[in-house]
Image (tube, rainbow, N blue to C red):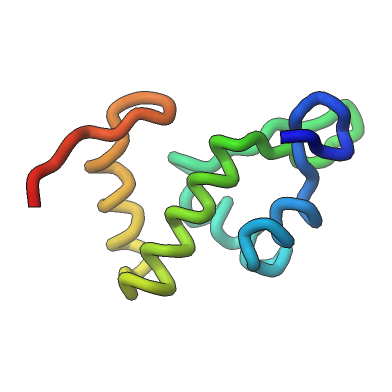
Length: 93
């Protein structure tokens, strides 16, 4: 990703535009999914996101909006699918 930061990180506005959510929703999801979604901070305290964060936000949005999971249900789904940083456990359906 080529964000305004010049180091591959995106700011809140850019992430919200990519994911299709409001800054309020992004802050809320950061609070609710704090075990999974922790953005970096710039020296000035601005939240910075990488491509992993964007993929995770898209996954959260899909679980909540398309699959109609509750926040708690989406948290549990993410917890069972995440093995390590960015890795997913293979599950049979």
